[in-house]
Image 1: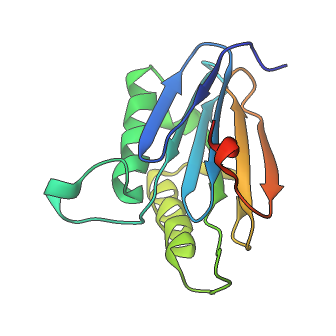
Image 2: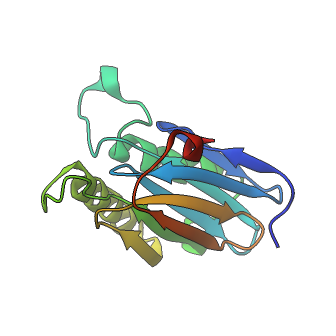
Length: 157
């Protein structure tokens, strides 16, 4: 059961907690990685817009390579062991129907970093032409995904 506290995660942000509750976000071509440590019952989620930057002046959580590494570091700062972390990758849609777009590059960036860090990917709900409303339960590590044909303004809060 999801605790009462819910946090809405904006694009370009990261959230990590050991408190019961849920983190939610809305994704189109953006990607979220949800990490969970079953030993500590600690969870974290990012929401990034672009796959990669090598420009240090742009090194913010808007970029998958920065955001996913920072998410892992923040989880470790909470006492998590990388060996206990599992992941879900969500989002990376293709809103215009193209097969090669920012969404697929975002998914590839998340996969690559998780593989490099040795973090097991439990599930992926990626690609396609629909948006996603995501709820991540920190107490259990469960993820709920609602697929929507059109993301409305009210979906963002």
